[in-house]
Amino acid sequence: MAGAQCCENPPVLSSVFGEGSVVESLGGLKAYTVGSPSSNAAVVLVSDIFGYEAPNLRKLADKVAAAGFLVVVPDFFYGDPYVPNPEKPLMTWLEDHGTDKGFEDAKSVIEYLKSKGITLIGAAGFCWGGKVVTELAKTDYVNAVVMLHPSLVKLDDINEIKRPTSILAAENDSITPLEIVKQFEEILCTRTEVDSFVKVFPGVAHGWTVRYGTDDEAAVEKAEEAHKDLLDWFEKYLK
Image (cartoon, rainbow, N blue to C red; front, side, top):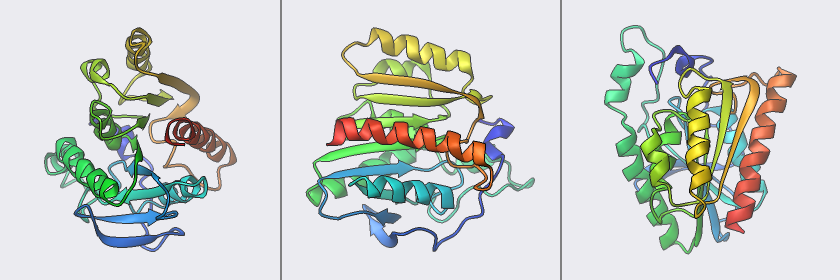
């Protein structure tokens, strides 16, 4: 994950962007929430290193909520998302923001949602968040997961997955290269007890689903194609 692609195209963060609202504590974390609280199905979006205030991520949350889900985007970084800084390189920031802590926090959020009557839970993770939802996919905390241009995911992780998993990958990704994605797919093809879907998007790079220019028509189209695939997966398993 130390590759430069993780740090490319940092979003301009906005604490007020989106159609939803921010709650101060949801399972112990501050979170952006949108959608009907009476829904019995929720989707947890686990951000990339730039955190829960990224406008394109919140825009996606609003889109998923419009399909009938309660959507939660927790602040897994406790107000300290990654900010490109030569004096604090990414690897140093990651020492204080490990995916193991993200996994434990995600479980707390999901336990809170279940305590409120939510019976179906999906989780989608982007880059850093891809590893977090992979860990969730090894448990009974979720019904289905989607990884989008994931980072830090190993072959052994894929062997341990037990929940329906969709992987949406970039053709040009130095973080999780195409040959690794193909190995993920080969493993999942042998795991017939676990439904899976693997798709490689041609001509795009790591981060394309949430770090695209809204004025770039081609980039928006590719991102929206991935968003539709994400929604289709959750429509299949959470309804």
